[in-house]
Length: 348
Image (cartoon, rainbow, N blue to C red; front, side):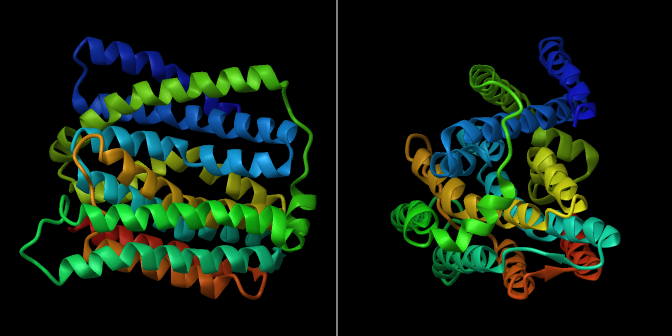
C-alpha cells in the first residue's frame, strides 16, 4: 500500500500540467494515477474513524465514504452534462465490483487456500438487497424503452425521483436491520473484522477532508479529458465509462479486497465487493438523481446492454453466495465473464 502513495506525485503534475496546457491524453493519465492513492487514503482514514466510533456509526461512515470517489467523479460529470458517462461509470462500478473484484479475490485467495469460507447469512442478505436494487433500476428503463420516441437521458424525471427516494429509504433501513433488529446475523462479521486503529482520530479526519478536496479538484480535470481522450485513443465513451473510470475510482478498494482474500479473510473481501455494489445502486445513484435536480435533471435509465450486464452480474452474485464457500475456479469464471463484457463494450 505504501508503494501506491508514490503516485501522489501525479497530483501536482496534474494541476501544473492543466495550467500549462498539457495534452488531454496525458492529463487524463496523470489525474487518474493521482486519484488512485487519494481514494486509498480516504478508505484507510474512514476505517480508522470507524474504529473510534463503534460498529454502528462506523458502518454508516464506511457506507457513506466507501464510494465517495465514484460519487465525486460522477457528480462532476453530471454537472457537465455527461449523462452517458455517468450512467456507464455507475453500471461499470457494479459490474466491476461483482465480477472483477470478487473474481480476483476468489482467484488469488483460492490459489493459496483450497477452500475459503465466509459468513453466508450476511452475504445472502446483501445479495438479496442487490436483486431488489436491480429491480429499482429496471423499472424506469423498461418503461422508457417501450417508448422509443422518448429521450434516454432527460425524460421521466418524476419517476426517477420517486424511485430514488424509495431506494434511499431502503438503503438506510438496512442499517436498522444490520445493527438493531437482526444484529446476530452479522456478529461473525463484526468479530472477524475488529482491528485496532492505525492512527489517531484527528489526523485521520484531517487526511480524510484533504483527500476529499484533492479528489474533487482532480475530478474536474479528469472528467474534462474523458471525451477528448476517448476520441484521440479511438475508444467509445461507453467503454471508458464502463471499464476505465470504475477501475480508476475503485483501484484502492480493489487491491484491499484481493489482499484480504490472500490473508484468508474472505468474509471481508466478499463484503467489500458486494457491499460496494449495493452502495452504488441504493445510495450513489439516488443521490446523483436528486442532486441533478439542481442542474439538468437526470433519469435512472440505462441502456439495454448496461442493464443486462448489471442484472447478470447480480444474478451471478446470488449464485455464488448461498454456500458460504469459494475457490479459485469460481474466481476465474467471474473474471472471464468480466473480460467478455468489457470486450463487448470495446466494440460498441
